[in-house]
Image (tube, rainbow, N blue to C red; front, side):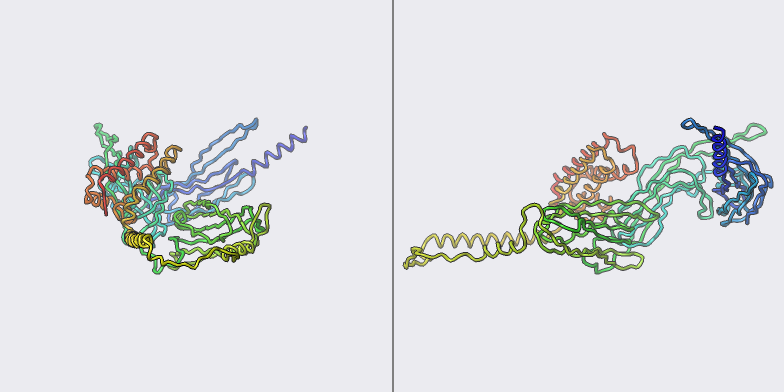
Length: 608
């Protein structure tokens, strides 16, 4: 028993020593001319001999650190553990802007030396409109454009340079279907924002959007146009342009309230009283120049843009008739992988094939989308013999090299053996085909007569001739009419617009009943955009709210119905990142409103 206690004591001491750590906590937001703090954190130990490191571009203000200690206890499954943390804080003043390194610092703990890793931090330049001043560490730096005494004063009106919204793109020029990172960010001089509401959502006309989760918190200081602002990311997404030319992105409209300080005289002293003021932010726009994909586009190109890898597999390798096999194609890479139409492979007719299963898994990685598309074909050979599944090609456009790239997988030479069921070999198929090609010669008296009367003398001949001639004339005009209709692609799309929209609304109804609100809004939006594109003869990539209203009005649709169309589009787009709008009642109401609006448009008998 005594040995066990000794072993447990030594083990606990070893675990405690192993859990000791010493690290530096660099400052987050530093502005030239202001004070800031650097903290060195020691865990599970008592240290001595720590000296403040000299930081280039900064002046040490407190050679002796401020020390704070924290102790925590945990009791789990009958075992108690404790953790102690000691913070050593030194105060510096930033002398100049730039990126600097906090050198390694060391401390003595229980007879041994622990050392931190060097850490980098950035000092932002001071506001151009104010002299450099020093602030206290541990909070946001003062970022007002006025001096410290009049900062956030209610006597100063809120200008467009005090608070605004920007659209930040990682590139201003791109190819069609090329991924672009878009960040909508709030810039403010005010640390306190009491309310924030979006009154009009951002618009991305001509783009497909891949949303990225973003937390709207005032948590970073950024230097912009000679001023320091507190920033918050309102929206981050990856967008894919669907057409060439100059495309415009609109940040949307926002209503918010900020807190200013009102100076109140108390005789000999002045005090500050917070006052809330409402601000309406006007939309910010940004333009992207989109270059069309080079012509001619190679055969088999399905609008894939990015960088990809292509592979395939056939399992099992030994095939038997009547037994299923899996032919799988795997596409991996970065780009618009979620919007690619996979090319159909050539599978021998002797193989029965089922509807392929497509599984696309994509995620945002940096400023693009990466993922894997898996297409699985289930095939069942019906005949014995040797067959060949040709190699499959996949064509994509690489924006980095501005070239089309063709990838191909290996083909498969397949030998199919006889399975447990009844099968027909290729040789048997050829014999059956020959037997039906030439009939046997019949012998014997067939009762042939030598009398002959020309058929032109019978009345029924001329009646049949007239019917055939009339049928040929009708067939000729019907074929001509069919060719005209086939050539009139826009007319066919116009005629089928309502049918296609109804089909998509049925899919949206399934998502609504399954309470899959995100997929419901996406399918409803697709149904509405597709219907308007087909009905108004406008390419989907060129649809905007302005030309939708103008075209509907010119076709005789009432302004009330046109307003209902725009309201449905806005509600669907806003619901994608406004969870409150996804209530069951609002989803069903939107579905009924969409169906009624399409019926109302159909009743106006819109033609081309």
